[in-house]
Image (tube, rainbow, N blue to C red; front, top):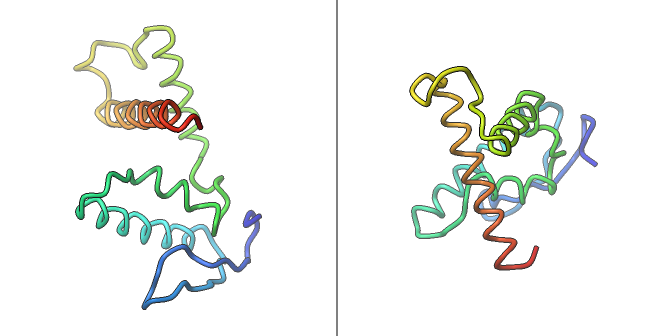
Length: 127
């Protein structure tokens, strides 16, 4: 569902007090809604919610788009690299911590945090 353009879907964000049905014709239009979700989640976090941006977006994405838009080939490679390194205790790139690419360090912290949140959720809810 929602894998081929064009398609119509109701977005999960209130705009002017109502949920809009939009016709999506490109990835860019899906990303526009994703950015609205990100902004909405950031506002809820400011108000004291314990939501997480990535979890919030991924939970709402199936209501208006295919999850494949979020999982690009490079993301899959990053996840595989992260899991391999963690499992085997090996650095992702040559060199020590200080020599690892800054972008990789940011990605690895994000992946670690997402996995820990997921693990805690499973332990709490059993799902």
